[in-house]
Structure formats: structure tokens, C-alpha cells
Length: 130
Image 1 (cartoon, one colour):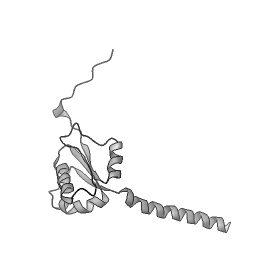
Image 2 (tube, one colour):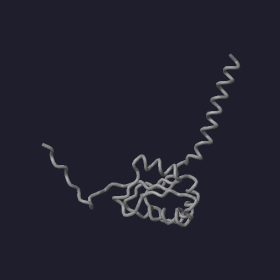
Image 3 (cartoon, one colour):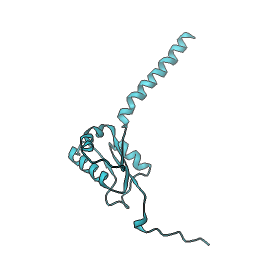
Image 4 (cartoon, helix red, strand yellow):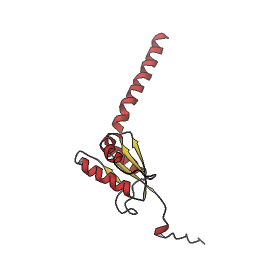
């Protein structure tokens, strides 16, 4: 016999969610990891920023996430964070949500390529010396 699972009232739900504002690759990566919540929150907790979005749209979404009591962490892609920083600096700071800047795919590619070149160069130098 299976025991019935305890029912938790909606007002007792103390979970905090993660909000995301990023480019398509960054946002999609977090959505595939299971961060997206559309059924529990009154509005979606993510925004895929494209060239079609205006800065004011992104700012409004950020403010809405920041004011949502169900959001505990907001992840903002590095290139977008530069536009949101003046808005964030003008806001009253609270303990939650925590706002974190995350690197975008394009900002990570250059250091990785440089590291790869360095490794290849060291390897070829070692082969020449042998």
C-alpha cells in the first residue's frame, strides 16, 4: 500500500526561484537545466534578450523580477548587465534576490581559445626540443 503524499497548501510554499536575463544560448542552457517556471509564478522567470528587445523592456523585466518575492536569485548575462547596472544602482537594496552576473558564451570563447593556443604552443615547443 502506498501512503498518501502530504498535501502542502499554496501559501506554505517557501521555495524561491531563479530568474534569468540573458542571450538565447545562456537562457536556453538554464532552461534546459530546469530553471524555467511558468506554472507557479504569476509571470515567467526568464527573458531571452535579442536585438528585437529594447533596453527599456529589459529594464522593466529586471525590475519585475527584483520585486517578485518568489525570486531568490537573478542571473544576468554579462553583456546585458552593463545596461541594467544603472537601474540596479538606483534601486533600494534588499537581501533577496541576489543578483549575479554570468559570463556569456561569446565572452568565454576568447579566453578558452587563448588557453588552447597556449597548450598547443607548449606542446609543439616540447616536440621541437625533443
